Image: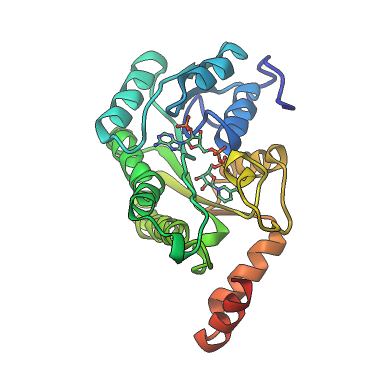
Length: 258
Ligand SMILES: NC(=O)c1ccc[n+]([C@@H]2O[C@H](COP(=O)([O-])OP(=O)(O)OC[C@H]3O[C@@H](n4cnc5c(N)ncnc54)[C@H](OP(=O)(O)O)[C@@H]3O)[C@@H](O)[C@H]2O)c1
């Protein structure tokens, strides 16, 4: 893996302490490494303890707080421990995600439930763990990784698209209220990025990106406090266009993707 070097390079970020869930691999891991390299203290959470420890061994300023994001108490305990050790969390990035590819013929209700639990409720539990302190301080930044699959309901992706569109709605819903209280909200909508999550895909993935440039786009957008950070532009354009077309046309086009 090509990962950023282990020595903090500069203090170019607006955050002292960042907490990232889903940081044991993929976008969460790459973003954690990049922010650590830029000088932030980064607290990382996920279930795979060995992966978290391997990442934290590479940096003095990365610390592991294992948690399953479907366990509200464990998520809160991880955030509390991170704040007790390293001070207030300035930026929370919720990256944990689950994806079970398959058509409705193969649908398993337990996978549907797990997708909603990890992708949606995992973010809600994360918010619950950091928002009270941010509201008290009147500052902070919360963010989560949704997907371009949340713009429209994609074929063979019922649970995933449903969970990701809920995350976009969640961001739209809380943005106004939190902005008034000094808290920024960002929703990150990537297209296909090469990670363990997409390694299981057997279909062609147009405009597939590598995780390093994806993490760079995420960090650059967060620094600008952008409400939406979406890439690559080609996937964003195609799927946002489908979203604004009338249903008779968009559903016909989406059917052809199936
Ligand atoms: N790759 C893409 O093309 C793409 C595109 C759009 C959006 N996304 C989103 O980006 C996010 C990151 O995915 P990725 O592509 O980087 O895949 P990934 O490498 O598989 O990372 C997923 C992360 O989620 C964590 N996770 C899963 N279930 C968890 C649970 N119950 N509790 C705590 N952590 C859990 C995993 O850690 P443990 O297994 O150690 O718990 C892992 O760190 C996801 O939300 C995904 O939906 C990815």
